[in-house]
Each structure stands twice: as structure tokens, then as C-alpha cells.
Length: 480
Image (tube, rainbow, N blue to C red):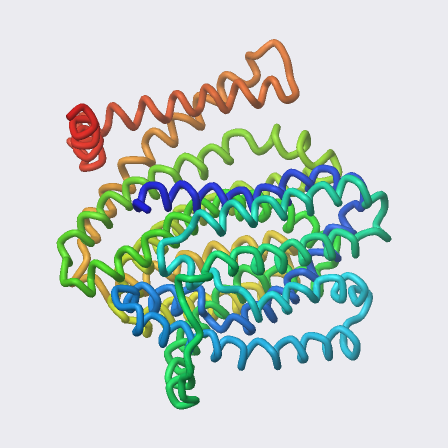
């Protein structure tokens, strides 16, 4: 399957899997309130930490290992068998530790936490890393989409008060497990479990553990934020932060989906010695990602004051001041993702990943510890901004002599201009419209999108941007 189709499938699924909870969010916000949203967020994020431990960084290491060995069936089978057995060796004791936490440590979130147990069980059969390494994104997208639609239906059918939150947790964790099982069935006939030695199994542990350190560090400043806000500032503040972050996280699904597709492709190209193609791909990717994230960040700044009360209800107007600065983390996340998935990981420079995200995590923890007691959820927002900004800076310090950072900065500046114009235009026309509510928001979004798109086209033409050249090549090839 081509990289373009893989990107579309993976982007559609990733965004859909994050978008579905966003669809249920208005109903939940009105049904369970700030406290209920905060309590569920607290339990889910703790559960997610155990899932990360159970998978031990395979979303990066497993994809790379499979993509680098897929040209020969015997090598592929051996690599798959070694990595999967290592996965089971880690996931089983992690599941037991989760059960110990649920029954011996958990407090008011115990019932919800127990309903999330199947998320940890799914670590035993989650083979998405193998499918992605083989460029098989279609099964992941289609089968997981089906089961998550069923989970979303359960929310509206069975949740009527805060006491029903365990149903929400059970529905989503069961969907996660079922989706993993159905996706893994797509590997039948493509890979085979073969006898391997324990030494060869354990040989994957150290490099996988190194990447896990980076995954865990990222979770500290993306997941533990909500744990710290809930524990320090209270569940109501965590509810405001959760709903603000949920929208930004939904939009970041476009970024992670793009990076997930490009990682196996870049790994394969670098193994073949086709470095120039990787550089061209990174240049185009920067245009796509930075153009998309600037549109998202400035778009949120333009319409959030009208969108949030309509979407979540008046009780969550406090999320408005949180979501505007959080939106600009998308630009930092996008930049770092392109560099990580298309150069650092494919070239096996795992230490750069670790140093960058651990630095970000340390900055985040320090900022959270100082700011959350004084500023509540806004303290976590500032900590997240500082953390996400630290990651690309550390990457730059290691790669400034290899990658054309000057070109990337020019690309970023290209999209800031139409973004600012879009914000000014939307802020100007919104009060002039003769109606309010969703109609007002829809017209503002439409006007902002047209403004941003036209601005980009003008700037591409004036600067002769590479993305415009690529588009012309694509059109001419289709005509032939």
C-alpha cells in the first residue's frame, strides 16, 4: 500500500479514535459535571501509565525492528517472535501490578479503575507495531473503528449519572482489547511464531527499554499533568484542564498519525542508503505539519471563546483561557514529531529521543510543582508549554549540523502570517454576524479556513515553496 493511502488510513483512524471521546464529551460534561470528568480523567491517566509500561516503547521500537527486517521472511519471523515474546514477558507482570494497585492502593477511583483493567490486558495481544512495520494500516483503522463505535453507543445508552462512570471506563477498555484482538488476526499468514532463544528475546529488551524511557517521559508531562492537577488543585480544576486538553489532543491525532506512517518508510529508506529522499520527505513534511498545526493553533485562539460554552456547557467556560495557550503546543509537537520519526528513530539515534523528552519531563515536573499549587490548571498549561518547547530545542542542539533548521524556521514563519490574519478576521466578523450559537461558530470557522488557505497559496507562490512544486509535479503525473 502506498504511503499516501497509509497516511489517510492511519490519520483517519487516529483522529477518529480520539474524536469519538470528544463526541461523547458534551453529554458527559452535562451528565457527570466537573467532578465526574476530573475523577474519570484521574483514573484513566493512571491506567494509561500502566499500559505504557506494559508496551515498553514498542510503538517506536517494534515498528522500526519490523520495517528493517521485512524484506526476508525468515528474518521477519524471527524478529517478530523475539519482540512479541519480550512483550508478553513485560506485559503479564505489569497486569498483575495494575490489579495490586486497584485492590490495595486506589481510593475513590477504585471502581472506575477496575473497569479499565482490560486496557492492561490488551498489552498481551496488541500487535499494532507489527502491522505498522509491515505498512498494514488498513486493518487497524477499520476494525478498531467498528468496536469504538459500539463503545460510543454504550455511553449514550447506559450513562445517566456520575455513578455510571464505570460503564464509560468498561466500554472504552473493552473496545481497546477487542480492537487489538481483531487487528492481530490480520497477521495470519504474514508472520509466524518460530522457536527463538531467550538470549535473542532479551537482546531486544535494552534498546526497547531506552525508547520506553522516552515514552514514559512524554507521559509524565502529558498524562501526569492531570494526575497532579487532580491531586493538588482538585477534581474540578482537573475537569476544566481535561476538557481543554481533550480538544488539543484530538487535533494532535493528525500529527501522530502522519509520523506513525512515515517512521517505517524513513527507516526502510535509510537502511537502503537513500538519505536524499529522506531529506526531501522531511522538507515536504515540515510544510504539511507546520501548515496544519498553525491553522489549528490560531483557529482555536480565534473561536474558543464561543465554541467552548456551546460544546461543553457554561460550567466549563473556565476551559477557554486554558485551551488558547495549549493550542500552540501543537506547533512544537508537530516540529519535534517530524524530526523524531523521520530522522532520529530511523537512524537509530535513540539517545537523542531520550535526552530530549527526559529534559522536557524534568522541566514539566519542576514547573508543575511550582505553578499548580499557585495557579491551578493554568500552572499545568504553562508547564506543558515549557516542556513541549524543550523537546525540539534539545533535538536542535544535537542535530544542528545535520538538518537544515534554518529552512524549517523559514517554513514556520511562512504559516504564522496567514494564521494571524485569520485570527484578526474571525475576531472582526464574529460580532457583526446577525446570529449567535453554532451558526456563528460555523461561519467563523469557514471564513477562517478560506482566509488561511488563500493566504498560504499567495505565500507559496511568492516564495516558491517546495510544497507548491510538489503539488505541480503530482498534478502533471496524474495527467499523464
